[in-house]
Length: 287
Ligand code: AMP
Image (spheres, rainbow, N blue to C red):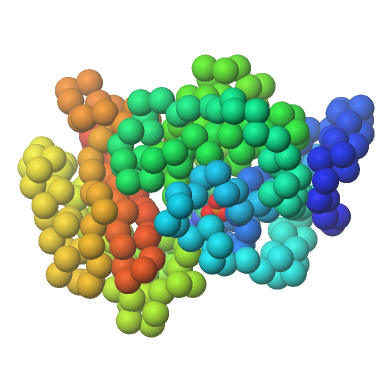
Protein backbone atom coordinates (compact mmCIF):
# COMPACT_ATOMS: atom_id res chain seq x y z
CA UNK A 1 0.00 0.00 0.00
CA UNK A 2 1.21 3.50 -0.83
CA UNK A 3 0.42 6.87 0.66
CA UNK A 4 -0.14 9.79 -1.72
CA UNK A 5 -0.14 13.31 -0.39
CA UNK A 6 -0.25 15.42 -3.54
CA UNK A 7 -2.78 15.80 -6.32
CA UNK A 8 0.01 15.34 -8.88
CA UNK A 9 0.89 11.91 -7.43
CA UNK A 10 -2.76 10.91 -7.35
CA UNK A 11 -3.32 11.96 -10.94
CA UNK A 12 -0.44 9.72 -12.05
CA UNK A 13 -1.95 6.72 -10.26
CA UNK A 14 -5.40 7.39 -11.71
CA UNK A 15 -3.98 7.94 -15.20
CA UNK A 16 -2.15 4.61 -15.10
CA UNK A 17 -5.22 2.79 -13.76
CA UNK A 18 -7.41 4.27 -16.51
CA UNK A 19 -4.82 3.36 -19.15
CA UNK A 20 -4.86 -0.22 -17.86
CA UNK A 21 -8.68 -0.20 -17.76
CA UNK A 22 -8.69 -0.94 -14.04
CA UNK A 23 -11.86 -0.14 -12.14
CA UNK A 24 -11.42 2.30 -9.24
CA UNK A 25 -13.26 2.16 -5.91
CA UNK A 26 -13.10 5.27 -3.71
CA UNK A 27 -13.61 5.21 0.06
CA UNK A 28 -13.75 8.78 1.41
CA UNK A 29 -13.04 9.12 5.15
CA UNK A 30 -11.83 11.59 7.74
CA UNK A 31 -9.61 8.93 9.28
CA UNK A 32 -9.41 7.57 12.82
CA UNK A 33 -10.58 4.38 11.22
CA UNK A 34 -12.92 1.88 12.80
CA UNK A 35 -14.82 -1.15 11.61
CA UNK A 36 -17.39 1.02 9.81
CA UNK A 37 -14.70 2.47 7.53
CA UNK A 38 -13.05 -0.92 7.11
CA UNK A 39 -16.35 -2.44 6.00
CA UNK A 40 -16.59 0.22 3.28
CA UNK A 41 -13.04 -0.69 2.25
CA UNK A 42 -13.89 -4.41 2.19
CA UNK A 43 -16.85 -3.75 -0.12
CA UNK A 44 -14.64 -1.61 -2.35
CA UNK A 45 -11.98 -4.34 -2.38
CA UNK A 46 -14.49 -6.97 -3.49
CA UNK A 47 -15.79 -4.91 -6.42
CA UNK A 48 -12.83 -3.00 -7.84
CA UNK A 49 -9.36 -3.60 -9.16
CA UNK A 50 -7.93 -0.53 -7.46
CA UNK A 51 -9.05 0.80 -4.07
CA UNK A 52 -8.20 4.33 -2.99
CA UNK A 53 -9.10 5.56 0.48
CA UNK A 54 -8.97 9.27 1.19
CA UNK A 55 -8.13 10.38 4.70
CA UNK A 56 -8.82 14.08 5.00
CA UNK A 57 -10.40 15.99 7.85
CA UNK A 58 -12.21 18.45 5.65
CA UNK A 59 -12.31 21.90 7.28
CA UNK A 60 -15.10 23.21 5.05
CA UNK A 61 -17.67 20.87 6.56
CA UNK A 62 -16.99 21.99 10.14
CA UNK A 63 -18.71 25.01 11.69
CA UNK A 64 -16.70 27.66 13.60
CA UNK A 65 -17.52 26.14 17.02
CA UNK A 66 -17.16 22.52 15.97
CA UNK A 67 -14.37 20.03 16.59
CA UNK A 68 -12.17 20.47 13.48
CA UNK A 69 -8.99 21.12 15.50
CA UNK A 70 -9.63 18.39 18.05
CA UNK A 71 -11.09 15.81 15.64
CA UNK A 72 -9.28 12.53 16.48
CA UNK A 73 -6.34 11.73 14.22
CA UNK A 74 -3.96 8.75 14.20
CA UNK A 75 -2.38 8.42 10.80
CA UNK A 76 0.12 5.60 11.59
CA UNK A 77 -2.69 3.43 12.97
CA UNK A 78 -4.94 4.31 10.02
CA UNK A 79 -2.31 3.23 7.49
CA UNK A 80 -1.93 -0.15 9.20
CA UNK A 81 -5.69 -0.70 9.28
CA UNK A 82 -6.20 0.43 5.69
CA UNK A 83 -3.41 -1.88 4.56
CA UNK A 84 -4.98 -4.84 6.35
CA UNK A 85 -8.32 -4.04 4.66
CA UNK A 86 -6.66 -4.35 1.25
CA UNK A 87 -6.57 -0.65 0.34
CA UNK A 88 -4.09 0.02 -2.49
CA UNK A 89 -3.55 3.74 -1.97
CA UNK A 90 -4.30 6.23 0.77
CA UNK A 91 -4.76 9.78 -0.45
CA UNK A 92 -3.98 12.06 2.50
CA UNK A 93 -3.54 15.64 1.28
CA UNK A 94 -2.92 18.71 3.43
CA UNK A 95 -5.62 21.38 3.62
CA UNK A 96 -3.41 23.63 1.44
CA UNK A 97 -3.11 20.89 -1.19
CA UNK A 98 -6.88 20.50 -1.36
CA UNK A 99 -7.81 24.17 -1.11
CA UNK A 100 -4.99 26.32 -2.55
CA UNK A 101 -7.40 28.86 -4.08
CA UNK A 102 -10.62 30.46 -3.00
CA UNK A 103 -12.31 31.38 -6.23
CA UNK A 104 -15.57 31.99 -4.43
CA UNK A 105 -17.40 29.26 -6.31
CA UNK A 106 -19.48 27.10 -4.00
CA UNK A 107 -21.68 24.06 -4.34
CA UNK A 108 -24.85 24.47 -2.36
CA UNK A 109 -26.82 21.48 -1.12
CA UNK A 110 -30.55 21.76 -1.74
CA UNK A 111 -33.76 21.14 0.16
CA UNK A 112 -32.57 17.87 1.74
CA UNK A 113 -29.97 19.88 3.68
CA UNK A 114 -32.43 22.22 5.42
CA UNK A 115 -33.41 19.80 8.18
CA UNK A 116 -31.86 17.19 10.49
CA UNK A 117 -28.11 17.89 10.73
CA UNK A 118 -28.45 20.78 8.27
CA UNK A 119 -30.66 22.75 10.67
CA UNK A 120 -27.99 23.03 13.36
CA UNK A 121 -24.91 22.73 11.13
CA UNK A 122 -25.43 25.42 8.49
CA UNK A 123 -23.08 24.95 5.54
CA UNK A 124 -22.04 21.47 6.66
CA UNK A 125 -23.44 19.69 3.62
CA UNK A 126 -22.11 22.36 1.25
CA UNK A 127 -18.65 21.50 2.62
CA UNK A 128 -19.32 17.79 2.22
CA UNK A 129 -20.39 18.24 -1.40
CA UNK A 130 -17.36 20.44 -2.09
CA UNK A 131 -14.89 17.81 -0.94
CA UNK A 132 -16.80 14.88 -2.45
CA UNK A 133 -17.06 16.62 -5.83
CA UNK A 134 -13.32 17.29 -5.75
CA UNK A 135 -12.57 13.67 -4.82
CA UNK A 136 -14.80 12.42 -7.64
CA UNK A 137 -13.02 14.65 -10.14
CA UNK A 138 -9.59 13.63 -8.85
CA UNK A 139 -10.14 9.87 -8.56
CA UNK A 140 -12.70 9.38 -11.35
CA UNK A 141 -13.94 6.32 -9.44
CA UNK A 142 -16.25 3.75 -10.94
CA UNK A 143 -17.78 3.28 -7.49
CA UNK A 144 -17.71 5.31 -4.29
CA UNK A 145 -18.58 3.87 -0.89
CA UNK A 146 -20.51 5.66 1.84
CA UNK A 147 -22.07 4.57 5.12
CA UNK A 148 -25.75 4.63 5.88
CA UNK A 149 -24.69 5.89 9.31
CA UNK A 150 -24.74 9.30 7.60
CA UNK A 151 -28.05 8.72 5.83
CA UNK A 152 -28.70 12.39 5.12
CA UNK A 153 -25.22 12.76 3.64
CA UNK A 154 -25.81 9.76 1.39
CA UNK A 155 -29.16 11.16 0.20
CA UNK A 156 -27.60 14.54 -0.62
CA UNK A 157 -24.58 13.04 -2.40
CA UNK A 158 -26.87 10.81 -4.46
CA UNK A 159 -28.85 13.88 -5.48
CA UNK A 160 -25.68 15.69 -6.56
CA UNK A 161 -24.50 12.66 -8.55
CA UNK A 162 -27.88 12.35 -10.27
CA UNK A 163 -28.44 16.05 -10.96
CA UNK A 164 -24.88 16.82 -12.06
CA UNK A 165 -24.24 13.56 -13.91
CA UNK A 166 -21.16 12.43 -12.04
CA UNK A 167 -20.16 9.15 -13.75
CA UNK A 168 -19.92 7.18 -10.50
CA UNK A 169 -22.04 4.54 -8.81
CA UNK A 170 -22.73 5.21 -5.14
CA UNK A 171 -22.63 2.14 -2.93
CA UNK A 172 -24.12 2.37 0.56
CA UNK A 173 -23.00 0.14 3.42
CA UNK A 174 -25.28 -0.56 6.44
CA UNK A 175 -24.49 0.96 9.85
CA UNK A 176 -21.81 -1.02 11.67
CA UNK A 177 -22.52 -1.13 15.40
CA UNK A 178 -20.94 -2.07 18.70
CA UNK A 179 -22.41 -5.15 20.37
CA UNK A 180 -24.74 -3.01 22.48
CA UNK A 181 -26.13 -1.24 19.42
CA UNK A 182 -24.14 2.00 19.51
CA UNK A 183 -23.21 3.02 15.95
CA UNK A 184 -19.43 2.98 15.51
CA UNK A 185 -18.04 6.48 15.14
CA UNK A 186 -14.64 8.13 15.35
CA UNK A 187 -16.25 10.50 17.89
CA UNK A 188 -17.11 7.65 20.31
CA UNK A 189 -13.55 8.08 21.64
CA UNK A 190 -14.69 11.37 23.23
CA UNK A 191 -17.20 9.57 25.49
CA UNK A 192 -16.36 9.03 29.18
CA UNK A 193 -17.11 5.54 30.56
CA UNK A 194 -20.38 6.82 32.03
CA UNK A 195 -21.41 8.51 28.76
CA UNK A 196 -20.43 5.43 26.77
CA UNK A 197 -22.74 3.29 28.92
CA UNK A 198 -25.63 5.69 28.21
CA UNK A 199 -25.09 6.03 24.46
CA UNK A 200 -26.89 2.81 23.33
CA UNK A 201 -30.14 4.50 24.44
CA UNK A 202 -30.05 6.40 21.14
CA UNK A 203 -30.45 3.22 19.09
CA UNK A 204 -33.02 1.88 21.58
CA UNK A 205 -35.01 5.09 21.15
CA UNK A 206 -34.94 4.75 17.36
CA UNK A 207 -36.08 1.12 17.55
CA UNK A 208 -38.91 2.12 19.84
CA UNK A 209 -39.94 4.93 17.50
CA UNK A 210 -40.08 2.48 14.62
CA UNK A 211 -42.23 0.02 16.58
CA UNK A 212 -44.59 2.72 17.82
CA UNK A 213 -44.97 4.27 14.37
CA UNK A 214 -45.83 0.94 12.79
CA UNK A 215 -48.26 0.05 15.57
CA UNK A 216 -50.03 3.36 16.13
CA UNK A 217 -49.37 5.17 12.85
CA UNK A 218 -48.62 8.30 14.89
CA UNK A 219 -45.40 10.14 14.10
CA UNK A 220 -45.86 12.39 17.15
CA UNK A 221 -46.24 9.57 19.65
CA UNK A 222 -43.33 7.65 18.10
CA UNK A 223 -41.11 10.71 18.46
CA UNK A 224 -42.13 11.49 22.01
CA UNK A 225 -41.65 7.89 23.17
CA UNK A 226 -38.19 7.76 21.62
CA UNK A 227 -37.21 11.09 23.18
CA UNK A 228 -38.42 9.86 26.56
CA UNK A 229 -36.22 6.75 26.40
CA UNK A 230 -33.22 8.92 25.56
CA UNK A 231 -34.01 11.47 28.29
CA UNK A 232 -34.63 8.78 30.90
CA UNK A 233 -31.44 6.86 30.13
CA UNK A 234 -28.89 9.54 29.36
CA UNK A 235 -27.77 12.92 30.67
CA UNK A 236 -27.71 14.06 27.08
CA UNK A 237 -29.95 16.38 25.14
CA UNK A 238 -31.66 15.62 21.88
CA UNK A 239 -30.62 17.94 19.07
CA UNK A 240 -33.26 16.40 16.80
CA UNK A 241 -35.28 13.23 16.54
CA UNK A 242 -37.38 13.14 13.39
CA UNK A 243 -39.35 10.74 11.25
CA UNK A 244 -39.25 11.56 7.55
CA UNK A 245 -39.54 9.97 4.14
CA UNK A 246 -36.24 8.73 2.67
CA UNK A 247 -34.35 9.82 0.62
CA UNK A 248 -36.29 13.05 -0.03
CA UNK A 249 -36.50 13.88 3.71
CA UNK A 250 -40.05 15.24 3.65
CA UNK A 251 -42.96 14.73 6.04
CA UNK A 252 -44.31 11.19 5.99
CA UNK A 253 -47.58 10.87 4.05
CA UNK A 254 -49.67 8.24 2.19
CA UNK A 255 -47.18 8.16 -0.66
CA UNK A 256 -44.18 7.45 1.58
CA UNK A 257 -42.38 4.27 0.73
CA UNK A 258 -39.20 4.35 2.83
CA UNK A 259 -39.13 5.95 6.27
CA UNK A 260 -36.11 7.21 8.16
CA UNK A 261 -36.08 7.81 11.88
CA UNK A 262 -32.98 9.83 12.61
CA UNK A 263 -31.52 11.41 15.71
CA UNK A 264 -28.64 13.58 16.83
CA UNK A 265 -27.97 13.57 20.56
CA UNK A 266 -25.40 15.45 22.59
CA UNK A 267 -24.02 13.21 25.30
CA UNK A 268 -21.67 15.36 27.30
CA UNK A 269 -19.62 17.27 24.74
CA UNK A 270 -20.10 14.63 22.06
CA UNK A 271 -22.68 14.84 19.32
CA UNK A 272 -23.73 11.40 18.13
CA UNK A 273 -26.01 10.59 15.19
CA UNK A 274 -27.85 7.45 14.24
CA UNK A 275 -30.79 6.35 12.10
CA UNK A 276 -32.98 3.47 11.00
CA UNK A 277 -34.55 3.17 7.58
CA UNK A 278 -37.52 0.89 7.08
CA UNK A 279 -40.58 0.25 4.95
CA UNK A 280 -44.19 0.67 6.07
CA UNK A 281 -44.27 -3.09 6.47
CA UNK A 282 -41.47 -2.75 9.02
CA UNK A 283 -38.72 -4.28 6.92
CA UNK A 284 -35.33 -2.74 7.65
CA UNK A 285 -33.96 -1.15 4.50
CA UNK A 286 -30.33 -0.94 3.57
CA UNK A 287 -30.27 1.87 1.04
P1 AMP B 1 -16.15 9.74 8.47
O1 AMP B 1 -14.71 9.37 8.57
O2 AMP B 1 -16.86 9.79 9.78
O3 AMP B 1 -16.40 10.93 7.58
O4 AMP B 1 -16.84 8.52 7.71
C1 AMP B 1 -16.38 8.10 6.44
C2 AMP B 1 -17.38 7.16 5.87
O5 AMP B 1 -17.56 6.04 6.74
C3 AMP B 1 -18.78 7.79 5.69
O6 AMP B 1 -19.34 7.36 4.46
C4 AMP B 1 -19.53 7.26 6.87
O7 AMP B 1 -20.92 7.19 6.66
C5 AMP B 1 -18.93 5.87 7.00
N1 AMP B 1 -19.16 5.38 8.35
C6 AMP B 1 -18.83 5.99 9.52
N2 AMP B 1 -19.25 5.26 10.56
C7 AMP B 1 -19.87 4.17 10.05
C8 AMP B 1 -20.53 3.05 10.63
N3 AMP B 1 -20.65 2.89 11.94
N4 AMP B 1 -21.05 2.13 9.79
C9 AMP B 1 -20.95 2.28 8.44
N5 AMP B 1 -20.34 3.30 7.84
C10 AMP B 1 -19.80 4.24 8.63
